[in-house]
Image (cartoon, rainbow, N blue to C red; front, side, top):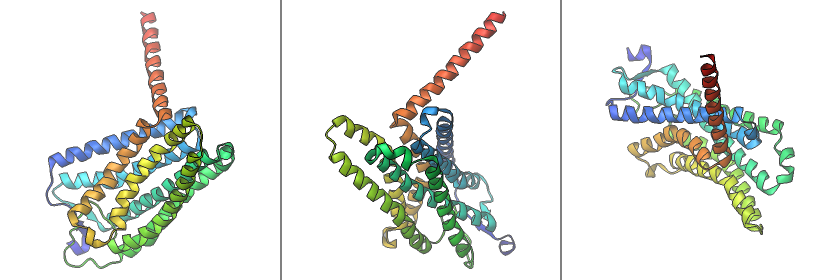
Length: 301
């Protein structure tokens, strides 16, 4: 039966507390990212290159968490904890595409912050709509190339003996992940390092304390997101195998596949005045429209 259906076992011990926690995080992550996308789309004050790139990050995070968590919850609640061979291949491809795309996008967002701080007068020219679209398309294409290259190679391995996956989602072998992600990390990390080095030099030369504060406020959210995302990726994909254990790898994988998509929009909303102000404007409009409707109803009676 296993040979014909090509099923791969995922989980053994379902846990209701774990299901509740993961489902709650999933709801918060999807809701927060959808609110972020809605705010950026509807509020004209957020129609800038930085927030356009941020909306793409939210789209990636939403798709990213939807790749693994729903299937994980299904397997935790179901007696038949399996995934088809094709489903596993699709999960690997989408996972690689999204994680690779996010690597590139975060690097390009650092370049956006460099232009905003170091070349503010040329910002509209250097970050026009065409360049922003090119950045976004480049991030998606770069991530998809990673998926197209590694997914067929991974799925061509013979699945002999036990077909149980000691993980909560399908992932490529560690050796492939190591070789791939070292190369994938080099480009965005180089962009981030050069961009923030130039930003630090520019801020150091500023005489105004207010200017330094604004520069820090402009970059702080992105720096926090980069540290969280790249820190987990560095541990998982760059450190030698001697530093890894199966349980520790699961915890780290859960962090960047489940928690990171939830943390990113929260970091940008809590640490960003523009997003917080836009959210208050939306809430004010909703409250006003409800009052107007209530007033119209009372006049009718």
